[in-house]
Amino acid sequence: MKHSPTSPQAWSLECRRFVEAGGDTTLAVRIGRMIGRVDSLLHLSPETASLKDVATRLEVCKASVSIVICQLSEMQSGRHTSYPADRRDFYEEKTDFMSILRSGILPGDRKKVEPVGSQIQRSLNVGPKASRSSTEPAFAEKQHDEICRRLRSAHNMHRRLDRLLSSTLLPRFL
Image (cartoon, rainbow, N blue to C red; front, top):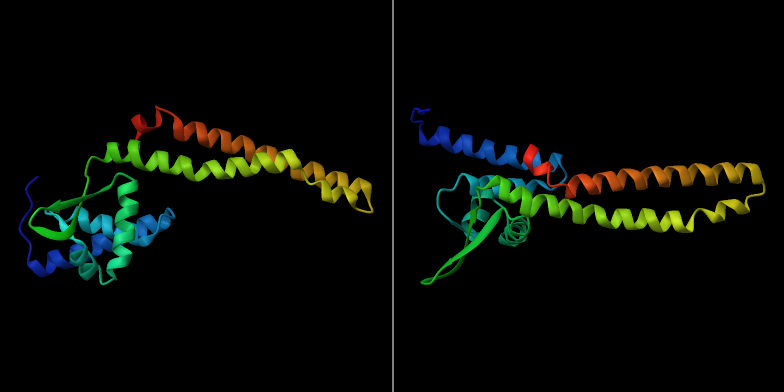
């Protein structure tokens, strides 16, 4: 599909919209707005971009961009490059989305939910024994049973989510 050329102003406006849409998207999935903005900006950059260039174009401080670049690298989405004659750090986006998904995002999501599963299991093992000391034993027993039911339900949901995130089939469907 061939695209008609646009004016530099129209392209600049469209780039800003794309960057903001990327930020809004990552914010909606609770990754953070800045990650989406930096990733989108790098996506539209045909050449590597320096830390200063990215910070200037997004109108943010270099420290924020540096932190986000590290996060993108952990997700296998961004890549640090350097040139022998230049001391500055340069960055580019990896565009192999299946590799990013398999190597970066899914394992990262699995790591994020692991502590939740451990805490649910600990809570199940300990149980809400303090509520059993209530002056109304029948009421305390109902509370205990309800809390245990909720913890078991959360534990089962966590196990299913963990299996889904570690499944070899998931990346094939995406």
